[in-house]
Length: 479
Ligand code: ADP
Ligand code: MG
Ligand code: ZN
Image 1 (spheres, rainbow, N blue to C red):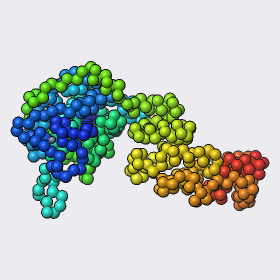
Image 2: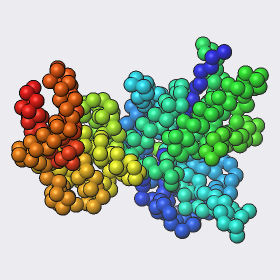
Image 3: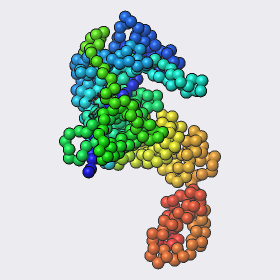
Image 4: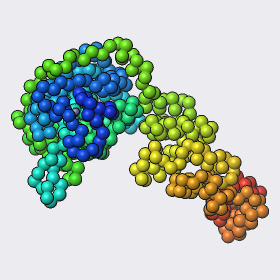
């Protein structure tokens, strides 16, 4: 029997506001435990929440960026449960009447575009954090840090439209790119600013009805989401084939062991007893506020990609890479503006620059070679001062030492050899060292030209002017 997976993601995004969702405490990450708390976020009796306007604006922006409907009126609700990281005993969230509904996200997998529906985007406050004793002394104890309580989140719930682990990871990446582009979140997955729950079920191909789903909580990497879903699909199919029944449950992805493990089943699941938050008025968002926010939206990755393809004549793949992050797209456009050649700029950035950055897992924002420095290097190659090949070594040195292209070329004596006499001598040596090849060339094997050029470049340590070498070789070989 063939099975088809059905997947839906719930993505939690921490919004990049200065203060928390319902109080003035700082949201800054990494402060000492319980240093950023007040009676409101500690849930003391008698306190009242006051909604953070910026957080609402950010949530609306995400709604607009996903083509969703923004509800003019939405309602906050209390989600009740008991857990040591939740001092109030409830989380303020939105339930039956969320702020944003009915949107979509277009993803690209295997060169095809697919639309994933977004059911809803609602606002909620985060809970605190439990740190389980890491040292021997602390073993067996857990520590409660409430700095994170009341930090603003949006939860983006997808339709069960995703069908493969690759689609899930592409969807998560697309959502991630957009929230970072919009500047509404730092998207930092290690610090928990961006995490998702993956719901997975399988059904026999052709069956209309969905199978029973399991949910994997708090996945914080694009790779983990793919691995966890792949594992879970296989596990479910195997269980069904063995005649077992899938139980609806929450499972945990153990990335160390590469397996999902059961956490709690539906029977033990929380009954949240949602009810409207009595301390907050319904949230009203006016048409004017929505249209102002619409005007303030930056160009989004998908639109930017289309523009890059048209304006700079780039292949879709390159345009996709260059627009995946706003600072990278800005870097590219700045370089094109300075260097004047869209294709050459793209080759350098897609090639050497991203290669070096990726090696160190470094972001474009702290790239040691800026657009001006890269443009200078491109200019030297264009002028013929150095060859393209030497240019790559120069670039690497610029990247390591932060020196200018001129300085590196001067220091290392890498100036291109355009002296006819010197090149001629090098070519003569190459030709006399390879008499067989010369014979074959003269016999009509003209594709050996590349071989001679390569040998001469090698002999000049990459510094020979390739145009001139070609010309001289043709003369000497009588081609
Ligand atoms: P809950 O609030 O209990 O988590 P929801 O109905 O809001 O449940 O669904 C949560 C997520 O699960 C959504 O992203 C939805 O698309 C997905 N989902 C629902 N049913 C299935 C299913 N049978 N298989 C896979 N995913 C599903
Ligand atoms: Mg859920
Ligand atoms: Zn507070």
